Each structure stands twice: as C-alpha cells, then as structure tokens.
Image 1 (cartoon, one colour):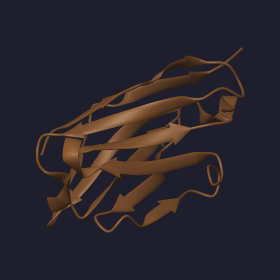
Image 2 (cartoon, helix red, strand yellow; image 1 turned 60 degrees about the horizontal axis):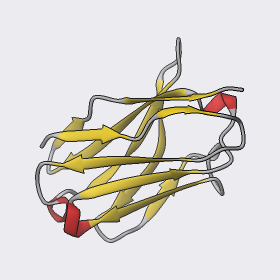
Image 3 (spheres, one colour; image 1 turned 120 degrees about the horizontal axis):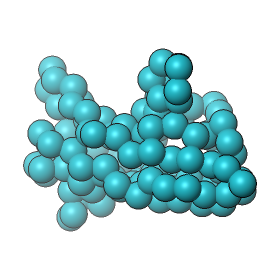
Image 4 (cartoon, one colour; image 1 turned 180 degrees about the vertical axis):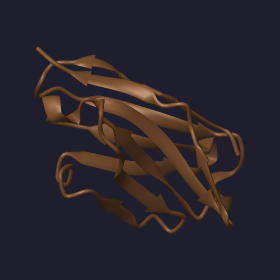
Length: 114
C-alpha cells in the first residue's frame, strides 16, 4: 500500500486547511486509515482515524476543530482542519492499517503562524 499525502502549507492562526491522502489500493480493503502528526522535537501522535465503517476517532486536542472523512470511490481520505492554532504546527503523516501491516505516507508540513 502506498500513501500520498498532500495539502499542507502555511496558514494563519484561525485559518483552515484540508489534507488529502490517496492510497494505491482500494481503501475499502484497509481496516483503519488516519492521520498522525509530529511536531519538532516531539513524538508522533494520533490526530484522527476512521474505519471502513466510517467510525471516527479524534485526539482530544483536535475534537470539534478537525474532521476526518473518506471517499471510497477515489481511494482517498481527508482531514479538514479548522480553527488552526500554532500548536497544530507539525508534519502530518497519513496512516493505514491493513491486515497485520501498518503503512505510512511521506508526511506533509503544516505551519500555523502569523
């Protein structure tokens, strides 16, 4: 499974971005997909995940601001990020769990700064 993440960039506090993650296989065959992020000098943390059934899970720090969704027809998941804050600055990684394997995309940088 190959994952191609995109959509990162520079945004001002309070702004929005939408990240995309395109998979090389049908995402209906992938049990869980999601996003993690890693800020400079910190560990990689869960942001949000979504199952094949559409059940979503969020980190407490992004609940109410971020929304994860999936488009099975285009084998893509999205992360809509609203009300971005400087503490959201990180490299965001797309993640997929299929059978017993975990897969990671290359990461996309999100910088929230005025």
